[in-house]
Amino acid sequence: MELLTDSTALQRWIDARRAAGGGIGFVPTMGALHAGHMALIHAARAQTAHVVASIFVNPTQFGPNEDFGRYPRTLDADRVLLTEAGCAALYLPTVEQIYPEGFQTSVRVGALAEELCGRSRPGHFDGVAVVVTILLNRVRPDVAFFGLKDYQQYLVIRRLVTDLVLPVRVVGVPTVREPDGLAMSSRNRYLDAESRRRAAALYRGLSLAREAWIAGERDGTVLENRVRQVLQQAGIDTVEYVSLREARSLRSYTPQADREEDPVMLLAVRVGGARLIDNMVLSSEEGAGLSI
Amino acid sequence: MELLTDSTALQRWIDARRAAGGGIGFVPTMGALHAGHMALIHAARAQTAHVVASIFVNPTQFGPNEDFGRYPRTLDADRVLLTEAGCAALYLPTVEQIYPEGFQTSVRVGALAEELCGRSRPGHFDGVAVVVTILLNRVRPDVAFFGLKDYQQYLVIRRLVTDLVLPVRVVGVPTVREPDGLAMSSRNRYLDAESRRRAAALYRGLSLAREAWIAGERDGTVLENRVRQVLQQAGIDTVEYVSLREARSLRSYTPQADREEDPVMLLAVRVGGARLIDNMVLSSEEGAGLSI
Image (tube, rainbow over all chains, first blue to last red; front, top):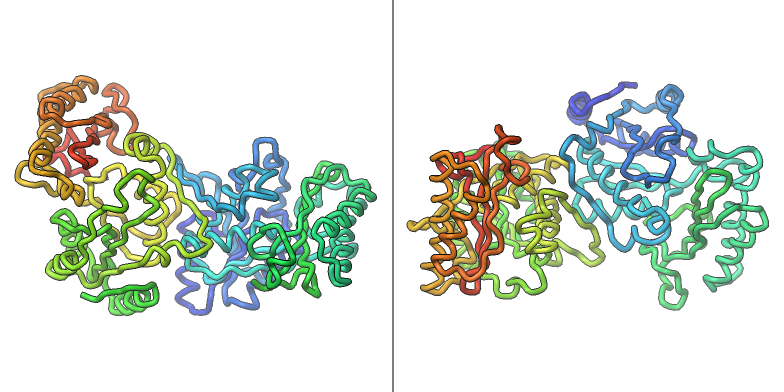
């Protein structure tokens, strides 16, 4: 796997691969890689000839009291995983390369980014929007792959790609889960044994809501409370939100008005020292198989 | 000259020209074309093989009390001028094509866009930034041409192109002036005979400031007052700002700290029903020959 540590090396690699033919697939990450990221690499390999990943822990998407400083950095292990997964190149920009002196441009997505995680993490999606715009414009891939675990982020990125006419196709890859259902996340490393055990309640709650949906329950508040109850019983410290939304617009789900819109249940909690998020499309058999 | 009224036609034209070889030059305008725009077309023809202009009166860069509604629309005359100037194609998107339903992304440049016209026209440069990003991503030119009459806009666009890594070279083209020095502007059409006569004071004031600079005057306040005095004597109704700035950063000009920075005098006034802007680089022999 080729290591690309600046934009000149990246450009040379991209130009050569583009000349060789076959599409370029891009998997942007913050490192601390796990099986969820590997699913992104596998999806990229299935759809494009040349796969480049990036690792960049983006400071602008962390709030002042968030975990930027302690976010796990595991570059050696990440390189082994990417190489084994058949990733062809790894782009490793520095903060100064992404945000050089004098940088002062911001990119913001509106309504889609304002609620849920946008409310609990002010500025977070602005940081995501600007770094994804920059990375997509540097790499110029044909297809870019994002995990559906970060469901709101996925919608925000699709929106900005559409609105700003970025020449890339955005693909969402279903969440990879541990045997007990916990969504793979770099932040799971923060969990001690007890918190890890409690964290399985996120998936249990979402699954119960889906079962209730399939059984005919259509009242959003009833479905949300089903999830909240499971989280409470498991001893989850803090529930930031549990919210049933339209899957494309993220507007509050109302069954009358939105007969064609799939419902997605999204949640964010704090457990141990970690902030965890998860989601499930209640109307999908897989709970994650939404293709929008 | 080819008329391109949607993005499919544009894309087909661009692809064919790119396949033919030679660079693509782009001149985005709001129509109501004049000799200043023609200078942009000529500069584009000199530097690129295929020149495409656009006419789009962008609603998002007008404030609620500004002149969007009455902004001059002169499409037939514009087409004649562009054809005569050797422009190869004209892109004419509708508002719905640029901002389709659900559009919700904004692009904002920071410090550069906040003062001067940014202060008197809140949101103006946000509108410019987003529409230029969209147009550049649709047209994908090798070089884009902007008039230096809109000096702050030119710097804002250079900044966003650099920051968001848009794959285009931005060229600023010197201001074209009437025989009495008035900078060409679509908004000059708003001027009645008396206002038109008064408006010549903008260039006279800037020229006097440049003469004072060349004679050794370095005090920004003295230079600004020289301009204000000329405007006042001419009976200009309202002076929005007269400000000496560093030519690259637009920070206030202080001769001690900024020995390497060129000084640019910028002004905005209201005369008759029109808002007019102009500027001059005081250290340049031409007053507009700055290449940054």
